[in-house]
Amino acid sequence: MRAPLMKRFLYAWLLCLCSSLSAKPVVIETAVWPGFTNADGSGAYFDLIRQVLPPSDYPLDIRINHLGRAWLTVQRGQADLGLGLTQYDIQAFQLERSALPYDEDVIVALYLPSRVPAAALNPTALATLQLGWEKSYNYGVALHIDAVGYEVSSPAHAVELLLAQRIDVYLAELEDLAGVQKKLKSAGIQQQWLANVPVYVGFSPTPQGRQLKQLWDQRVKLQWENGDMQRFYQRFPQLKAPQIGKDLSAHSKP
Image (cartoon, rainbow, N blue to C red; front, side):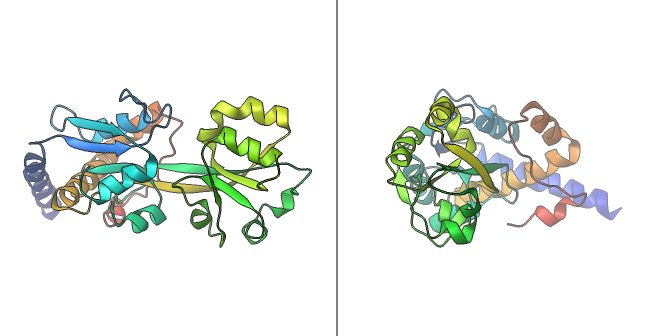
């Protein structure tokens, strides 16, 4: 009898939490990632939020901003949640982290083989090279590389810097390179996989943000248990689902 009682208690607690949070919109501040967080409110990440927080109960107020500024806005409590944060980002911006990641960043290295041998694409050797990476994303920390990278404004800019030998290697998230693949090929720039880094939802460190994190974690847990989340990831094969064991209680804490 204990398990059914606990489940009824969980649903009652979740209902109370839902009612306290549904009075005002959920403010999301994020950068634009085409196909994932489009400026018009479409995209896989926004669909995930609507799956967990139905707009009929939790209307979304989506605000587009530069990545670092978006996370800073969440830190200040001017937005409720941000997306695409690594564990390091969560700690650096002092946010509340979703219990489970919802996707992974596929990090690759762009390089000219005539200048950098493939054997140098390991953490020890990379630390001795001149690296470049996107603003607001510390790839060095994500890859456990003790190095300072030159912040590059765009992948197209990174191509120019590589060709001019201003940087040796550009570290990037694979999805961000979709628009420059032809340019990479024509320039003879190659790319090599380095790591898959889990990314989380980051919630503001405010009473509202902490309540929203609790609600998010519980609803995600329930949707993994009833199969809704598995069906969501089947609809979006471009997303990397977290590794979930049979006992989801192990994932109930950050």
